[in-house]
Length: 549
Image 1 (cartoon, rainbow, N blue to C red):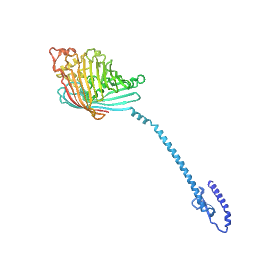
Image 2: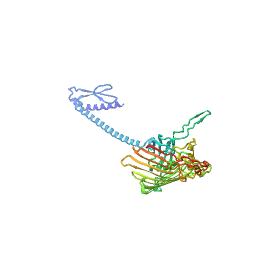
Image 3: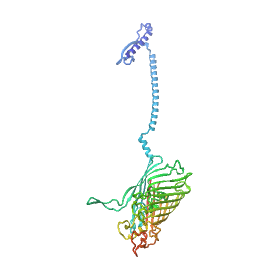
Image 4: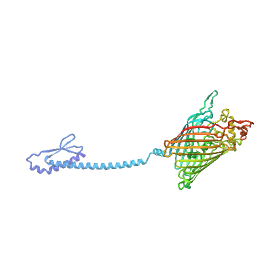
């Protein structure tokens, strides 16, 4: 129907044009005017001057009715109209494209702000999790070997008669995992590789077989630190204590870690009480931190309650030990060890034995086996140098196991009988009689050579394991001296000498005098002596390395 309507409309137009020009046709009737045939496409209603496929004849009109100029004008008008229409469509399309681009940009911004849950979790995880490592290694060479404590943790040396002994060692490896779950809370886990020493005995399997032990000399892994810490407890009501922390778990004790930082050369040698008997880590709880006024630190404290056992031993007691350290900076300190300071430390505890152990005056036996350790330090730290002096005192705080932590007589450990049997008994009597009192003095410091990566450092320790013994053959001096090289912020090297000297002249000790300190060890034998009671000295050279990241 639609094409028919268009056809009729077009026919009416053509008819009207025909009538309009009929007068002119009559005037020129004697002249035959050329006719123009028109064709229409029924499907579109378009009119053509030529026949073609799908086109039907429409009518004839005189060609003069449509002049060439008029036809060109109409075609131009139609073309112009079509161009204007096309331009309008293009402008509309450009406007829509601009609107679409703006919408897309806004959508992208919204998508960027609305992050997927996994991406948000990963980014938060990165901000709340830290991983670090600490490695101590060394090469050591001994010109003289003797009995004595370890220079570094898990470093053992053959005793007398093994001069020129040498070894490559890894004395400490930490992986520090620190998690910050929310503001003020910190969780630290620090596994530690260590050397497992022990008697390599076999284990029975079935009725006729056995397997060898892999205990002796193996490198094992144990947890060094594992604690939860909160640092916002005092912020809202005690501004001077802002940032102080509360810790619980397997944590550093108040003295050893602090003194290691003051000294700065823990990767070379142990600090005084750590060398003698005090572990660097305890299981318990503590509160610690600085006390500040006007942005300066005047007091730094650390107080805690812990197991009597060290972190790597099983706790047997129904009592606990208390430790506390207070560092005072009379002129104020801008950082932890700035300027002049005085530090006091005290530790009171008991021997690690079960409550039903029999009562005895000997150390670590029953309720009578109490002990204490104390230290008083005066120290000064400047930009390029630091110096500290220390006085140590204790009661039942240094045993034969501590003296022989590097190596000792087979007799003492019950794995053999040697010519040192009398020496082992003397050590037990003097140090493990429940009435031993210790005294010592220490000096340590460093000097950084300006404009160089080199630092000179040293430590001197003078110690009396039991001041109640007249001219104790176990009295000793320890001294360390060396130079370090700071390769970069993570890596340090040190070349040093470490020495242990029992400073009394060689002597014999009467067995009756020995047994007067501990009658329960051995009955007195008249006229018998401990021959050559002064141990041999130890002298060594170390090349140490520290990687701390």
